[in-house]
Image 1 (cartoon, rainbow, N blue to C red):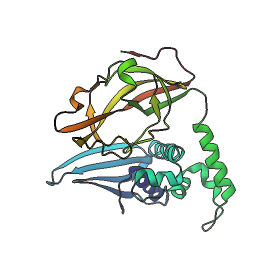
Image 2 (image 1 turned 30 degrees about the vertical axis):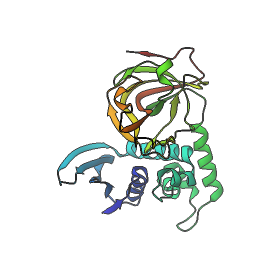
Image 3 (image 1 turned 180 degrees about the vertical axis):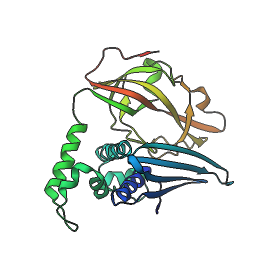
Image 4 (image 1 turned 90 degrees about the vertical axis):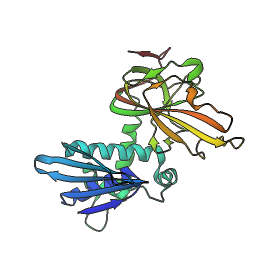
Length: 285
């Protein structure tokens, strides 16, 4: 049984898939998230099924557990797709800087678990660099295609200054139609990879249709008079909420604390992404 301890879920899942490719049938992943520990035991079963036993332990040794069985090919395809999406968003060196855990992007492992990349490997000790580069380039072109696409999930960032004047309140379960652009300023929202930014004031390049499954409000708190204005340098507090009213009165400053409300990380399910823009993005129930 292999064991990995790290703060980056994607890297550990890629390494787990590499274990299964090397004909191991068990793998353990542990993430130390102070003050608790999240542990996932993965078992590759007959008929290409993957069992996940998930345990979450807090500092008082209390434990919650979940058990899931999924098709391994679906799990593998999701890990590969997410790996290339992260690579496109951050780059090889940018991944290390963005995640701030001194961890290199596992490009070699990602290529190895990708079944279509098997042809890149000549023997056990060398590979064909030109084929590897060609494969990566081809995958990136697929990600950058301008055709309408469907995704099971994507993440949109709604900045606080964008929504109050032009946006509408939204809640979990709402189906939304938003004008968005590819995330440039906010790609790594303190641990969440952002695919798009909702856009009211600039020039949206995509229209996104989807159902809201999660809303994470982000704020920072500073001692009075010591406000830090940089989002990327601030200590950000993330809170799950069920409805966004675009003002978030609970996050306003008071006599002792200066609060900055940054915006929302919104997870959409059953997503359709279309190039070009609708005239008036709107919300539907």
